[in-house]
Length: 292
Length: 280
Image 1: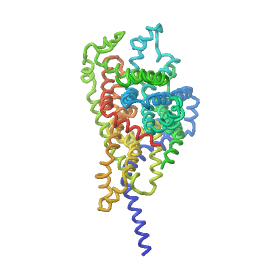
Image 2: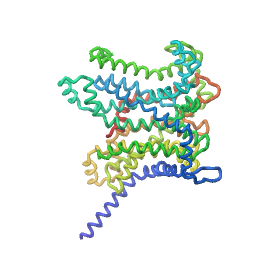
Image 3: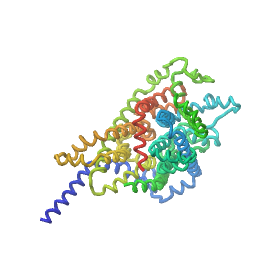
Image 4: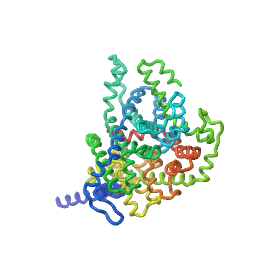
């Protein structure tokens, strides 16, 4: 009798496991085929040098080559400079969080529209605006006395310009997330603070900013990761120039993989980016884990 | 304009920051505004400095040229086709998986779900070289499947919908089970309709993601006719004879569906982004 019950239980468990896998299965197969396998393959590829006839195992040579290449080192730095959007997102959100719904949605929409129209379109627009011969920006700068402006052709100005363009195209994301989490904060907190005579500045720094810390953490991570993969702007605005001064990691990867046919080195860049992304998101996973 | 009046009655610090934010918001709209207005100008008017704030005439020549001399119609079709198919399949696959993670019990569930979540943080670009190799091995380059199937592996939807399914009370499932309903029936007929708001938001978010996808589609589209709008239009930038009007019109056509979606679905949309991202 007892044996039979146990058996039934095991069978039942098996059956429910099977149902579960039937539901997850299709997604899982795609996941393994197009994410897990390529990641492992990427690690492997980064240890090989590909020639037309065979793949030669070269150990860490690709990585060595990478770190010996000044363009790569430059690309890492160029990548690091990008992280500015979070502070601005926080500024906008703290400014509008307690305003009328209409005003908030106007502000949110204005900053988010550039995100919607994609980096490809934004890059094209900035290409027109920044054109040294007939762009609007060159015209405006010329009017205040700055002549012969070629922001994208100057190795000093090209990165600040690219950063600005990326910033305009992406900052809406941070703003939307901040506003969403600030709206979720119960109003009594602010009412209580107001009764105690807290100024706006105090309310912001003592209540608002600490309470949205999980969002800040999340945004730091996704912004750094987004920066790692900056590609379109570079391709459409500068092609990495002048003199490689605007090469980002992703652009470096792209060039090596699909133009110079250096797949080993490109895979090595990918692995490094992968590791960075994973390390960055560990605190994020912990936050996910604690909740459940 | 009521909110403008409100600005006058604020604390000083608040007033200054709000005016700054308002100005920046308008500036942030400017590039898109510039794009739309210039797409209706003649090339000569686009080059004119100082520029006209509004186009003097609604010149449609660039759009005509775009659709006549460039395969822009095919690009538009490709973009819609790829985005709609990818989105639909991805929503179905990820809602099934999300349902299992939220409501069913099976071995290895926790580990699998953490793996899925881990993949959310790692951009596809990091393993794009091996991914490309796989697609080449399948001989899929320059086909629709290459533009659709690898993108389905993305687990964002699983993550986003799981919380929707979790919020549905277990009692619904249990009473349906007592009535003898199969798991599939419960999922398809009961759970999916309840999770509709989440699915709608996911649909829009995914559609936008796939519509704006660039690098992958660039690698996949070998022939000009297989390009999606973003790839085809970006390609105009690299052509040797610069025709500024044509390029502006191309960028406007690529941007327009997104602008419309944003205006129509704004509410859905901001909710979706928040639901998907800030589940701390």
